[in-house]
Image (cartoon, rainbow, N blue to C red; front, side):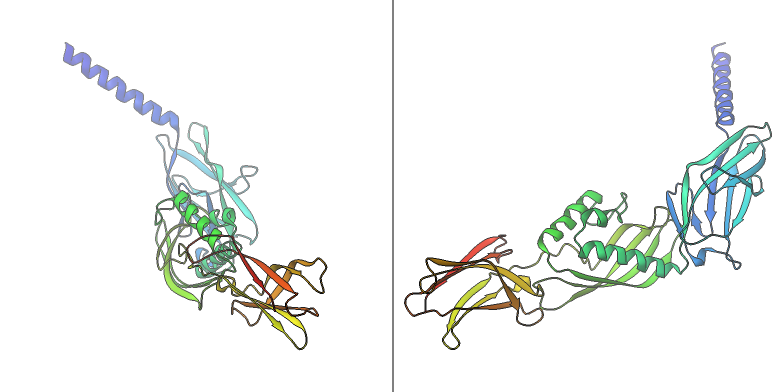
Length: 354
């Protein structure tokens, strides 16, 4: 008797589960736009390679439903209008995309009982880039390079997926590393060049050549990096490995100051050698002069010294002053932003007399 009751209980549970599945309505087994999977996608960018020979997007998918499907409709404007798709459980829909326009995909399914279900809510965002996949990735990396060169942390991290999986492990650790780069580097020049592209179902992999310069480097750094993009999340970066362009803290140098007196014409020559500022073009120093002809002092709180040649790190300037021996005293102050022992914003002072 107990066995019969237990079997009856199991059959009831099974029936309830089946009814719940039927009540839940249809679900998507898969859906694609060209070769790009839309299942679980947020933002998708299609390229010329994702269109058919007539320049149309082929949207295809398969439904699972306990109740037979009567028809399927597609909306590209977040549900304001719907158009019928071909087929039922296996459906197909064609549309011709326009550049600079954003589509919001929703799928409406009507079953044989007349019930309707909206799939894909709140809407998969689809846009079209009128070029090849390699050209699209090059554009994305140019955005990344501009954010890195301008040291815009928020803009840089907006191009990185929250599912970032490679060194440094995770999105937040990468953010900390990039923040350190932006704190230490000056006058950054970074260029990317996409060499090869490989498409898989869930990932776009690219081999990328990079070239990097920042103040204090005697020559450009370069290397090859493998970058993976998520085609279902606005082509955000999910992995970077190989020769990393980031995470290379610069080696600081100690700035050297000198003051010399030129007898003819009577000038005071100021010179700062700071290799960390190579390429800056100019720097500012503070100069005070006491003694004849200054009474009591002449003050130059923000005097500009200009770089003698591009990326030399040598800055010079002069002050025309009719100085006299043993009565003129010159003091120059300069903020050394990065030193050899890792200190920052160190005040350097030098005082000279003729």
